[in-house]
Each structure stands twice: as C-alpha cells, then as structure tokens.
Image 1 (tube, rainbow, N blue to C red):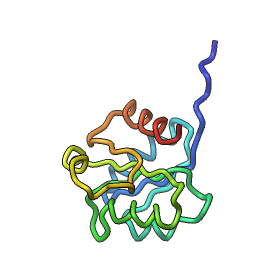
Image 2 (image 1 turned 45 degrees about the vertical axis):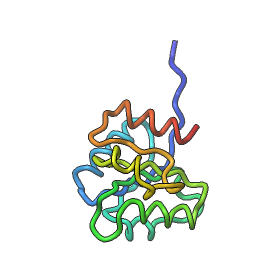
Image 3 (image 1 turned 180 degrees about the vertical axis):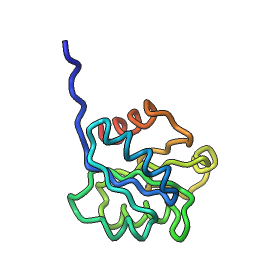
Image 4 (image 1 turned 90 degrees about the vertical axis):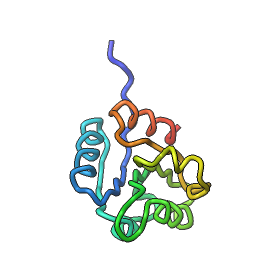
Length: 125
C-alpha cells in the first residue's frame, strides 16, 4: 500500500551561505519541490512575483538585509505568501517583537529534515 503523496511546492530559499542554501535546496528537491535560491534579501525581492512562489524559507542573519526585513517586505508585497525563518537565534527571536506578523514559522538551526518537513506542512496547512 502506497502512502499518500505529499504536495509539492515552488519554494524560494534565501541564505547568504551558499552551502546552507544548496543543502536545503537538495533536500527539498529530493522531496519533490521546485526550488530557487537567492544569496540575500535584495536578490530574493528581485525574484518575487505574484503567484510564482508558494513559500519562502529565509535565514535571519544575512549581509545587507536581515531576514526580518525581507519577511516584512514580502508581507507588504505578497501578504498571502508564507515565510519560514530559520535561525540559530530562534529562541531569542521568539521573545522579541522583531518578527511580529512577518513570519509564519520559526525554525531553530540546525534543524533536521523532519523538522523542515513539519514546518512546511504547518505553514502550508
């Protein structure tokens, strides 16, 4: 008996560490998703078009524009687009007001493949 196939999404992964974004991209592609990467917030914003992506996964600490600034821009331009933020500082971010209303899920780095899949399932409902 086959297990039900999980839906596949078009996901934008934003991280200024290429090795991190490449690793996340490979895992997501292995799970059937279509993935594009951006090396920073400005590059991500340049890729954002209505209906193009179904989900954005972004790092918090990046050169130039931090993930919270990127998330704010995304929510202003495309309010229905879910944003998952991955950060080693997730515990501190949870207790601050930097992410209020900007992020749909916060993922603590390092995270497992199962945690990533759970986060995606959570925000995509």
